[in-house]
Image (cartoon, rainbow, N blue to C red):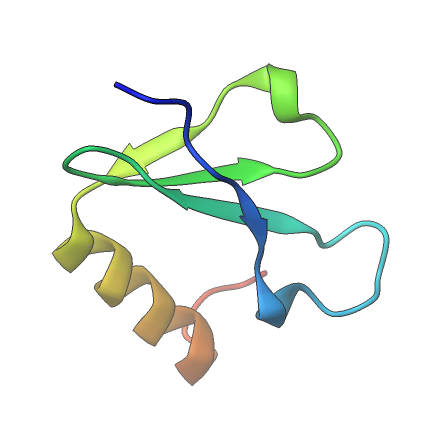
Length: 63
């Protein structure tokens, strides 16, 4: 596997404490904290990632 290419989410805004990066992994989507890239990442299937994004956009999560 090649190294994932991480990109800052456009939804992160300019706040220093709300930065999220995403990357396409072989069969999953990776999500990590851009302030701590060596701290690991969450990996989920594309459908689960889509569900997560829908919940965030709808304001269903207490973020």
